[in-house]
Image 1 (cartoon, helix red, strand yellow):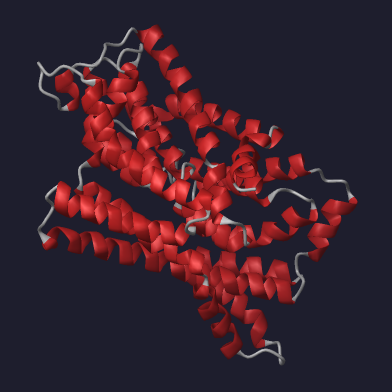
Image 2 (tube, rainbow, N blue to C red):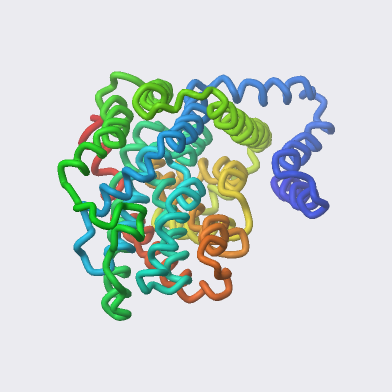
Amino acid sequence: MILFWILLIFLLCLFIGVPVAFSIIIASVIPLLFEPLISLTQASSIMIESFSSFTLLAIPLFILCGGLLNLTKVTDDLIYISKALVGKLKGSLAHMNIVTSVFFGAISGSSVADVASLGRILIPAMIKAGYSKEFAATVTAASSTIGSIIPPSILLIVYGALAQTSVASLFIAGIIPGILIGITQMVYAYYYAKKHNVGDIENELIGLPKDQKLSKAVALKKSIFPISLFLIVIVGIMSGVFTATEAAAIAVAYVFVVAFFIKKQRSFKEYIPVIRRAVIDSASIYILIAAAALMSWVLSYYRALDPAVNFLIENDFSPIMFLLLIMVLYVILGTFMEPNSAMLIFVPLSVPVIHGLGIDPVVAGIVTVMSIRLGTVTPPYGLSALLASKIAGTNMLKMMKQITIFVLIYMVSILMIIFIPQIVTFLPNLLMN
């Protein structure tokens, strides 16, 4: 019953326009007002203690790292590298878009930053090469989701903190699923290019001099910075040299050195907006985390989820069935809620069930993040798709056919992970045991 009232109060607050974080706090605090054994001081202590997690320090650091990367104009290097890898394939511009998103996700982890940085270059180039506006915008938005799966990923850090799951394991587990998404999207891009006979890449389309010949040696040189950054984070975590948070701090220091001394970004005025943006974005996530910690504690105190856990166990609800339920739930939530908000509300609710059914929390985490990130492509939230449509000069309604195709392709990847969890667990078991 207490769960019903908490959810009802939460939904009422949302309905009247209360921000998500404060809706969670209000819904969690009201039951405590009628509990004589608990004071509101204790509630505030729980929220403050939620910030004491060393893991959560990685969030502002990785956000800052992504901002600093934009100063280095690493996007230009990634596009050159992608052209060297897939420039001769049919549908090369679409493949470049996807491959560049894989690289960008591996050093930034931001879907929106991916669309904003790559879309302004690759979407106009794809349209000039013969791709439809709708396909160009959709492939850019859809491939940007890879950034939330390939480490480093803010969503994986948030999930790890909420579910008390190793962020290092989640990072390593996200590598194969991220590549899987990229491969499935490239298969469809190849089919589209063959069917519509779109043109090949021309240098001027992607900002290169017309007479410049592609050099694998130059591509290798340009890849040193992004690949070394990825390896510093991943190899350092896998080897146990440092934690995910320490990796984030080292990544920030490394990117700053490259930006300041190698890329010659020496005007401190350029760094102020980056730092300000990182502070604001981190603060909004931390407020949500504090609110979610309070709700999780209240639900645990009242043992509100025990009936649901017992029901699922007693009725032989299989792990696969529950993971399918998670997928459907988060895909739906992602269509109208910001991913962090949706996870902060529902991950604390699902964790007891995940443990009760014996589901690997790393598998559940990857399925959760993949499913909720799909919402950046689907309307009405569809932030990545909305930004890409503006760059392409089209709208979401016209993009729906291509969006539907990419959503189905993406969901095939999620279903493969649900039915073959070894796709997720293979690397963590191999490298971290």
